[in-house]
Length: 506
Image 1 (cartoon, one colour):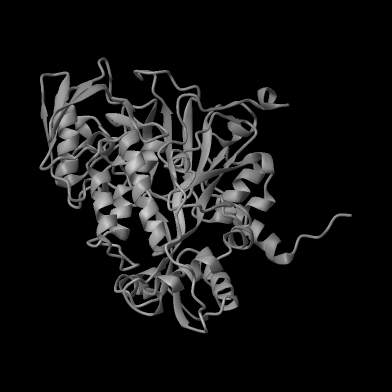
Image 2 (tube, one colour):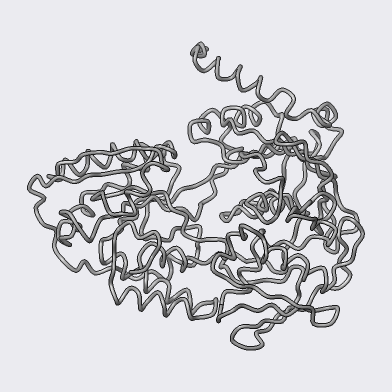
């Protein structure tokens, strides 16, 4: 029996169809008839800064494989060659990077040491600076024509990792214009050249035949910016897009499961407990909160099973974390809440968090607490959260920043001087562990030190990690070799291709 579509859903589908009209107009007819191998991409957010690589728009250029950096990160967060083939640390504050020969920018200019100096100095002198350079004084100078020296004011063992950030992409010198304007059109070095940007509606890229590496299989990319989640889901269902960013959880059940791919994100939904004032100063009551939380119930009911139950602060997006994690010894036994009142707060900007708050309130009430909830927009609640005005605060938090390393997140959230210390935590042993981790060069030893610091933080019960979020990526049956990157730096590369209808047929 065929069930009728509810009116609200049919209306949503109609609205989505209207939103999509005009989104994929370039080469659409040919693509639908199998005559084009161009990849049609529906993206979540439009450009906010004219696709400047010095802004968060840099991640679009990276995901399109248009702009490239000196180095890239592998799955473990270790540095691998890109526009630089080798590097060495010269002293505590200086590194030397040898440039890849025979690299051509999209406008015909050659990759030289002077070109790298122009690009990195533009980033270092930008106002505001790229996020990856917050608190960092960066210097760069040519070392002959085939190498550059990059320095920092103080020792920075993560400098190579910083240079992997898409915000430090190297464009042709012609990209850097007066008044800090950076134009990425025809000035990158990747396998796809950005040809045109139509405001906040679309962008169009072609294969770059002069690429230094493997040539792209697809002849181009037609990217449309579709903020409406229902419209992005409809684009996959109707075949008007081949690759879809960030499909909402609510849309996933409407799609063919074979076209839905969940990518673990370095983002943890955590309950921060106030260790400096209120009832949760008592570690035994914090232990009672920890014991009361049913993580699986939250994952199943709020996230519809599309998240991972947290075992620690660092989740499966950092594949090295779980094998290095040691059991946490509970320092104190949980106390009887005896009706103690807790003020539980969160913000409404992320749709799932108010529902998480409702579930947590139910669980804490069942354990014997009295719970009062506060929900506001983030801009109206952040200051009170940082001032310690709530007993408990639910936060969806990115656990790695642009360097691919979690030390900055752990320090800001859990050190005595941390700028984002919602838990009001101050433990000398935690500070010492974080300082030790920060001083170690990237690699296995640093990762072990990070996990030792995580273990101390978890033992304090200042933060109760509940779940690790995933992003849902849609891929049509005709698409092959799309990238599923937890860091959201890569999406399409030289291998990604759109097959003809005949080749894609089972």
